[in-house]
Length: 152
Image (cartoon, helix red, strand yellow):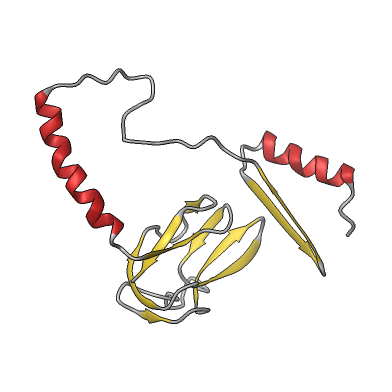
């Protein structure tokens, strides 16, 4: 397969028409990734169009939430999804998961599979340590850069 301009333009149209953020293809020694940059969205659980009203009561209820944020930051190193796809924790439906919370792993261990465009992509850990949290469930859609699990 040769990645010609017309072919690349068709891939870009597929991204735009299907609300995708990324397409990655490999053919032998050739590889191409087309990624659509999305505006950074900061979500606080409040719709963007809703007005924010400051009052003493909400300020007090936000204080514990702010105290929890640093605790969440201490989860360790995040293993993030390198692509848009579907998360699978097991190599097959009747198999054991690659990893569970509390498992010790080393750099290069396969921790999950992300299915993208009917291709099963094994995701390897970039870190050694202990799995402290798995953020997604089996069969859940994941986005590029989304944390999948944390290693401490």
